[in-house]
Image (cartoon, rainbow, N blue to C red; front, side, top):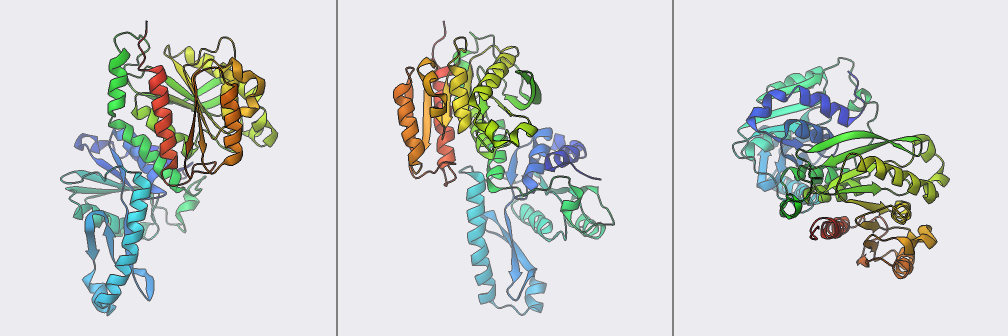
Length: 447
């Protein structure tokens, strides 16, 4: 069985786990590659998603041989047999565990971005990875999950070698594996796309999954206008869409929480795509606040191969405007734009057209200078967000702030560079964008 990518593997794995939906399980992804698979499983089962951060404790002189594992909450799983046979003293154990504990804490804080670990006490926990080679890490994760209080532990993977699969069946309450090929040499050979999963993608997926627990901002947004607006959606929408814009077929991901009264369209920058972890983290924050989002690619894959196209903001703006018309045919509420880098220029150009009627615009590390003389025609309230360590772009945005005639604010995130990769910087962007869109498209009184 060959999988297109981790998302495809997650879709297929979820079909084999449907019988667990009635148990209200918690889905736990092993970072990093297991989280995209777990995300699809959790979404299909309507289950909460978290990471299971585990660090294997390796024998000092033979690191690949584990004498135990540690997990969050002070959980320790130690093999007394290996400790005895390896003649390990307490100093050896303490040294290894201290180093791994520090890395475990760092990873958990990085991935959760301030959210608390889900309580597993008495729950059915589904541990998910993108595949198994030896099974050592997966087995350790299952032990840690049980030690954290899970009543039932299910291990689910798309692919594993037969010998590892046989061993794991005996160490969990249930083992679900879609494929156990005999000719197995590596997990990646069973995927068409097995590219590395970066930390940012893990953070983004976990943030998106947290939308299941709607925030207070979402409830307030629905209450403010639910009785007055016929644009409110009655059920959650999460689908891949095809958009005809300026004669080109574009692909996008439309997410509209039930009760949403406004949708934000994302125009990404050069070298990015609708799969950008940075934009998806922001989109997740907007979804939590009860706003819909549409992330889509303004260029086809063939067009993206020519770098000059990503700076053709006139064409990008034309396509964004056409896509806005497409969205208005499906959604009657206010529409906003979130633009990054060159995408911000496209968003401002599109917002400047006479019939645009855009509710609000947010620019992250944008190049508003590429919108040039059109800036005074923008009527939408505009928030410009720039990193404090991005001096050239700060100057460009200050000039744009002076040129814009609509309500405008420039926010500088201290210590952040152009991509806001510093710890906590992107979350500040998400918070600023959320407040701007909610404040200008949801909470004002409507006639």
